[in-house]
Image 1 (cartoon, one colour):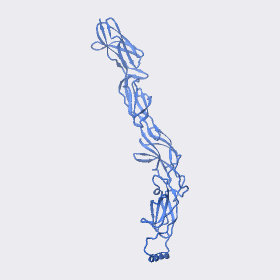
Image 2 (spheres, rainbow, N blue to C red):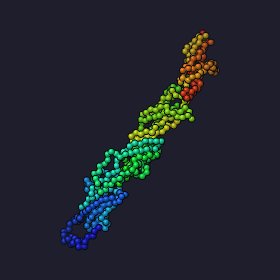
Image 3 (cartoon, rainbow, N blue to C red):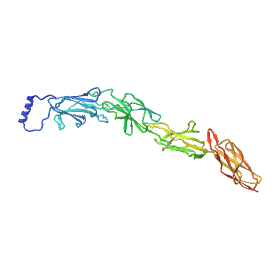
Image 4 (cartoon, rainbow, N blue to C red):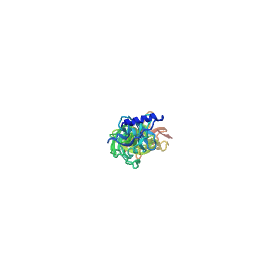
Length: 419
């Protein structure tokens, strides 16, 4: 800083001695306050000014709408008439569209001893606003994301101010997992990225950065989660009954497409049985017409606005389906010498022979084979002696449309013979 001339200083002291005691006289305000970026890195703002004499200075960042200092810095009396202020110390972390000025006054931490001369006004525009263009999911945690400049941007309220620069806006893709932010590479001008994230859940952020705002200023976001389906089915069921139902639950958005897959053996390929949208995170597939096989449910990868769900498979469940068999005598009571028809019917409609058996009081004995067509067969019993005799049908295991059905017995049915 400039030195006070000795004569001037002596005159000031003499005037002070002759004048009545009064408050400290105001110093002359600095002039020609200028601001500019220190260099091309845009890390610091250089403030310069002109003043007469050797005085400490008080530099303040203030809103144009209010004289209240937002940031205050101090320069010693023997320092040059300039100050480099880190941009991060000027800009609020969240960005702002307010207009600012930097004031320079004579003064110390105790206060200003002169009026403050203000720099040209400037604003601190944050990074350009961006929005999701599109994104897709692959596998268990791979995302392909595209973003674009939003159609509406913040207004530059001080066009061509000394701190305006162009070409500094960059995008910083990153994800947040368990409170920890992980950058996906360096800031870039690219608007597309494919990456494999951690195990869900996590959040993808497309942060913007420029000379004022760092990458902690998140723009567009994607919340990433995963489905976790369960599945259950009784291990042994009868065909064509409601027991043969695959049911379970899943985590997710509560209204999702659930795909049921099956295979006929542990070594055969999976195929899709059907799919349906279910609500309340529960599902159920009625498989009453199906045979013995293994099942699993798949929840596909799903994109819903700014929420992404990676799908998955339930554990494999197996069921053995037993043929449903019914039997009865059309005429359960006959006279000696008459014949009664013994009907057998089954589901599904297997083709082959049933075996009609009679209880002799000690064990089941074979009466004979009965052909079955379209799920129906008939045996014939002639009443030889008066009495009651129990019968049953045995249906051997069979295959229909590649699906296996376990063997089954009918319930016991009785023929009464009278004289």
